[in-house]
Image (cartoon, rainbow, N blue to C red; front, side):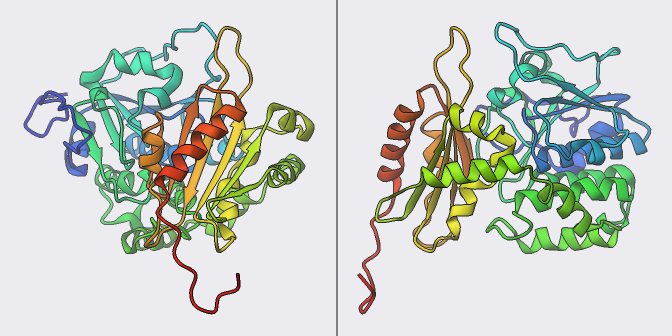
Length: 376
């Protein structure tokens, strides 16, 4: 790849999590590559999988050898979406293993990290990426990340999904006049990323720009009902058993404005389920009018020589009394979006609950006064 003013690695990385590249600069840099490795956060969701698969297909269409690298567990719908796109999957991080070494021979000219800029979220891939900062380009829409990962950062924090940003890069790489003219195998994973990160266009991050892109992708031939059925209507009975357990643990706090649920390892064993079966639980309880913040705590399996670990998933409603759960979790070592964020706490389940409740209550605005005539 030749160095030019638009090359993604021309300048040293500033310390702040700020954008340094445009979509056209990233596309231009990638067009000069022969081989590209594409990574995302561990346990990829619809946006992570969709944006990386779409980018790999656009690169391969342009004659560039592109491969995706993932750290499991993978969503159950991944295989039919991935098809024959080169996708290499590493099992979840193993105790005592210091990273993984992707089989990238020859070495890639560029590395794309999509839908995250966090070292922690890369898990076992982090050491490999860390050794190649001059080749790495970040494409992300999160509010925070580790700026030392790369000097080249295509960041659009108000994008609904990483797929929304990647779509522009794919259009440039493919030479299509618009997203509506993208090949179907590129349009489909882009739509998947948009749809899943917006709750199928229900969440407050859904902008007019998001809907225009979704319409273009539908025009490209995306079968939205098929995708919805594939992703959202393939639950196992274990999900219902876990949901029952989670709801039985529900606590209503702060004048019913916070709903908190928790699942222990015993709950997972009883239900014969795993964390994939809990997707959406924290959002589901926001259907209650009073609840402004939904929380799900899950106890992780114990690892020898390691402290207990509890994962927290938080969701909040928009509005004048909205709680910024990204800021809340960032103070605890996590992060995400203003309305959807998470954090891992090195505490037993009960202690993690107490620590998180204290942080949430401190962040909650005062309860609004009941309107005159309201039922008490």
